[in-house]
Length: 206
Image (cartoon, helix red, strand yellow):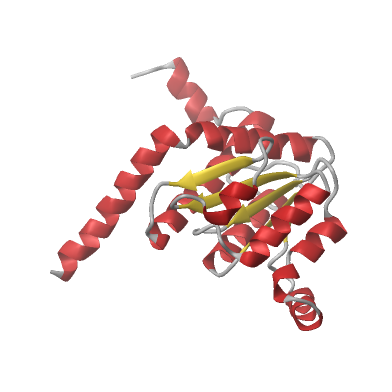
């Protein structure tokens, strides 16, 4: 019984990702273009989320400042979840909902991108961060699930909303990680061209 349940987890994850490949690809492409335009135009990507979404934001930032798969110049990115001193100071002195918004107002500028991750789209501190980003004329790229919650209603036409069609948090988070990988790969492909292995496959199709 346990073995079957484990196998079903893999199947459910694969099925959702296949579905999202069809439905979310245009939004992921739009997010990639927004991020690319920012970092090549002198801007940066600020990212945030809560719990496992904070971890995903950190990994995204690491891939931009370091690398994803290939060597390239570092790209400007900052995770708003990473500095424990800043986080605890803001939470102690202000409303906890301001923990990301104050950082966005301090660090964000027009032309920057705010990347937010929230499985249910209702996290108060993420909603406040989006409001702060709009005050700074930043573009927001939002990764959510289900129906996007209150965050979906807060976004502007110039923002990008990638909403995973699932109510299961683990499945939503798995797709969020894949989306972030796609954005990193897409930026690298635009900056560096396709990897040699992909070029050779296109030149010599089986």
